[in-house]
Each structure stands twice: as structure tokens, then as C-alpha cells.
Length: 258
Image (cartoon, rainbow, N blue to C red):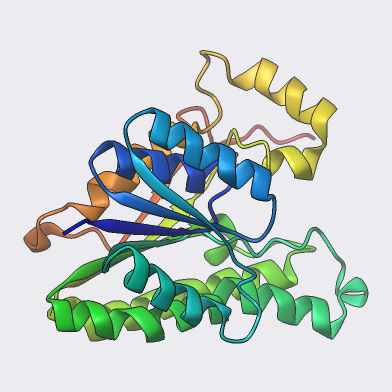
């Protein structure tokens, strides 16, 4: 039977590289993203050209019933999902409180927290019936530290973290590995940080910190950690970890501008 890894949020950064890493080890990777069919097709083609198995699925995770239907479709057409990676972002940009409409705030919650809840409610009981599985959840600094202009994102990520804790408390004893993975640094990803900064600033950042300098997180290296977590012995499961580039310094160690 084919092992299946489902990636919800399979862009060109973390999600896509996690998919490629699992495919290298024989998984069929179900890559799910909201838009860009061409990019999705290209990712599938790259995995298949390397000898792996993959399928691409467009998914608007805030649509009612869409997540649940896709899980059913993947399991019916490909096989039982052994690992699911919830990599869906919830970043709506920096917005002051007065500039954050209720619908915008709610959108962050729907992507960041409710979507994860829906995945868990649909898939974890199936995993329990099959005797085990893994749910790996990408998170962010704002899950543990809020910042100005990040009301929606911080609330969504904080909720995501607490939801992971409750899921772990209920399902770990049933052989379901829940992992909350906090990305505490900039990632060399064109469709996340690249869009946030714009092409010119992103190119400048990559010139200064990537290209052999390793001062910005490389998605392929992050993917190795995801794969390792998914295959840990259950006597030593990781529930929560954070990752950052080796050059990152906590704010209290930065020199103060006086």
C-alpha cells in the first residue's frame, strides 16, 4: 500500500520542499494549494522526473466542505493519508487595529486555526482506526510573541499552537504524532517572503544572506527536519520545536540605538 503525505499549503517554499523530501522516500505526495495550477503542475512534474509520485490539487481551504471533500478524494483515489502537513499561512499583512476589518481578522482565523481544526476533525479519527499517523503543523513567531500590526496573524497562530496542544493531549496516546513547528526566521521562499518584500527587495535579501551564506532559512533544509519528525520513535516524539538561521539573534542581544 502506498504511503501518502498530504501537504496543505504546497507553495514553492516550505510546503513544496517538504513534499519533495517525502517523495524521495517513496511517499505519494498530495500537493494542495489555493491557486497557480501551472506552478502546481510544475512541482508535480519535478517530483515525477526524479522518480517520485505526486498529484496536484487546487484547494480553497476557507470554502465550506472543501478540505473534507479533498481528504475523502485523496484517500479514495490514492490511499490512506499517513502524514498531513498543515502549512497554510494566515498572514494578511501589517494592519493597524483601526485598519483591520472584522472580515479580514476573521479570514486569518479561518486559514490559521479553523482550517487546522477541520483537517484534524476529518482525518485524525481515520488515523486512529488505522493505528497511527502524523500531523505536522507549520507555525510562526507570532504564535508566541505578538507584534504591532499583526492582530489577526498573532491571534490565528496563537490559536493554532493551543489547538495543537489540545490535539496532542487527546490523540498522542492513540499513536497520532502531533508536532507544532515554529519557524522563527526569514525563509528563502519566493511566494511568501518574496511576495511580501517584492521582487527587488527579495533579490537584495537573497544576495546578502543566501547563496552559500546560510543566513536565511533554506526550505530544503527545513524539509529534512519535517521528515525526521514524522519518523521519530514514539518514545521520543517532538511536540514543539523552533527553527531559525544560525545568525539570528534575539532582540535583547541586539545593540541598542541610543
